[in-house]
Amino acid sequence: MGEVKWEREQMLVDKILEKAPYAEGKVRRERRIEFSIPADRIRDFLMLLKENDFELMLQITTVDWPNDGELELIYQMWSVTHRTHAMVRTRIPRDLDKARMPTVKDIYPVAETYERDAHDFFGVYFEGNEKMEMPWILDDTEQGLFPHRKDFDMLTYVKKKYKLLDRFDEDKDNYVI
Amino acid sequence: MVDWRLFEPLFNYARKKSLWIVAFCTGCGGIEMPPLMTSRYDLERFGMMPDPSPRQYDLFLITGYVTPKTLKRIIITYEMAPDPKYVLAHGSCPLNGGIYWDAYNAIKHLDKYIPVDVVIAGCMPRPEAVMDGIQKIMEMIENGTADGWKRYKENYEWYKKNQDELFGEGWREREARRWIPWLMDKKKEE
Image 1 (cartoon, rainbow over the protein chains, first blue to last red):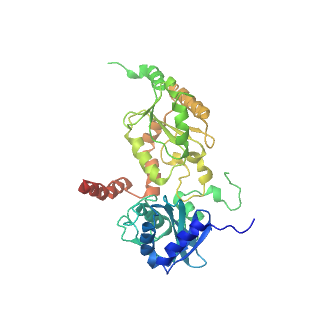
Image 2 (cartoon, each protein chain N blue to C red):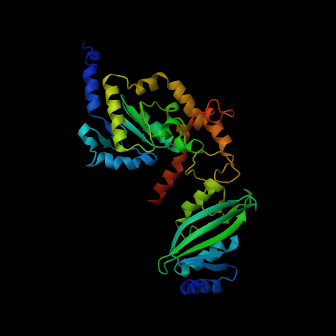
Image 3 (tube, rainbow over the protein chains, first blue to last red):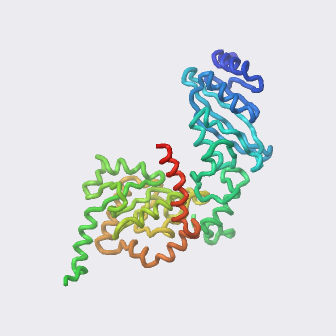
């Protein structure tokens, strides 16, 4: 079997990249395309995607890369017209005061929820989303603790918060499970 | 003057025959409720039914893991109910944390915060197991050993201490105040 070409997807990527020279794009496989863009152009790029019939935002996924000192935000977009899934990757610094992004709430209204999610679990602050500071899933969080970051010390936190000691007994005389 | 304690066995018999369940499903176990309530296992033949209001229920099913956020609502819902009230916990998560034993957002022992009468083991318990637990709680109601509501009153300081340790002092008022701006915003939009 020779190399498979997905012409329809390649045409879509070329069409979008023509208007967005700051982005890199490629075809992953049938009906999957991928872009990576600098973080400050996210609003321009998502507006461009919306003009190109990407009607739905499915999710904003966050990935933590502690070794690079970066957080990766992945905007998952779906086009009903082209029946194509687009991943838009962007990287921002991981430090709490620098992990800031412009909101895309006015372009895709569902982004409000996903931005709150990213703020709750990873500490990314989206400027312009006024519900950012509202309690959501974790409604009694301590300041500066973001549980899905990879350097979050889960066992220490659980021991402290739930006062559950017997399961973590070091010499395992008193193990429960 | 009638001594109503004389009629207590009769009342207990009546109570066990009409348990109303508050419609409050936490966690994964909620998915076992539809087969339990509908035609296959048909819980209504025992005189049980799901009840939307927390003011009239007798039986509180904790179906699965409990997060701190849910636990606040559970405690408030539990305290709203009139006596006597019974709690039936499903699965291992309310008992000892289950597979969430090291998770940051699931409480490990439910009976530190509200009294639990019967715990069904398993993950998840099938409707048969739930019915077994319900039969157990019916027996306990009839012979007067399902006394979680009494224990909650007698040891309220201990339960309240545990709740305050987890949520912080004055969490009920804080929780109410926290949602007021949101409610006000909703009113402005209308």
